[in-house]
Amino acid sequence: MSYEIVYNRQFLRIDDKIIPLVLYGSNNCTQYRNGRERRERDWYSMYFNGGNQMITATEDEILNTIQEYTGGEYQEHFMRNSKCVDDKGLIRFFNDGIKKAKTIEELKEEYFFTGLNGYFSIWKGMENTIENRVSIYSSEDLRKFLINCQERINKADQEIVYICLHYMNEEFKPRVTKQKTTKERLTDFFAIKVFDKYYLTQLTAKRIKYTTLCHLTKQFKTEKEANRYLEKLVEKGFNSQLSVEHVIV
Image 1 (cartoon, rainbow, N blue to C red):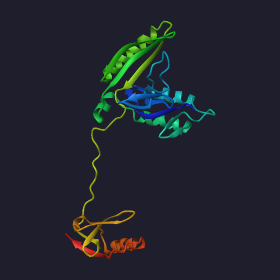
Image 2: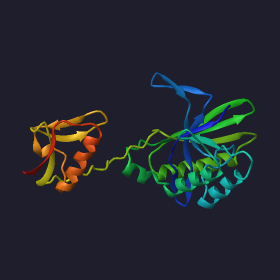
Image 3: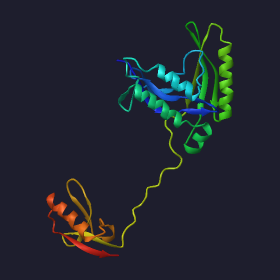
Image 4: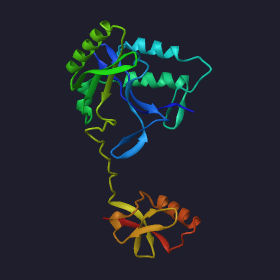
């Protein structure tokens, strides 16, 4: 059975239009990348990549087009995250993509963004040629490319013109990663002693971890909390001479 697999999505906003760029490919085809064979994939303007068709659309045009693909007996549009996407999922997919659509400048600011490659794939009968290969690094570059797209479609003579636009990168890694919040350590707390000379730090599925350094121990604000945790350890079968101690550091 042949089906499409979606790997990533990043809709591109340009003025009052959106290009619904999605990274996807067939489950039946493979490609080599960095010397490794994998299922093929590339960026396409999903549902807006037909012959002699512009790849841009307004939000309403996109949603109206997607509605045309719903309501039928067939409810498996593509696979994403190892799950089939049905009609409701398809609409959510595009609504969310529109909501998170970004300009090239926004992508450059938020991510390690390389750019895009654009070109025309021209078919005349069984013959295929590639025209107008360009690299796109700004919204102004994209506007010029889209103008050329419409002009090339308008002058197509017994030809089918496919507009191709691909991000140079498959993933969008944020420039700023969220900082992990460090839990503030207490200076007056209760701890659980192990063998009367160690302090409990962590409970795993199979054993207790402990340390001689009291400031690294698992901390409890009250003696009641510590005793409740100690009872839980005993219930799990940990009887390593456990006791509760008041610690001030």
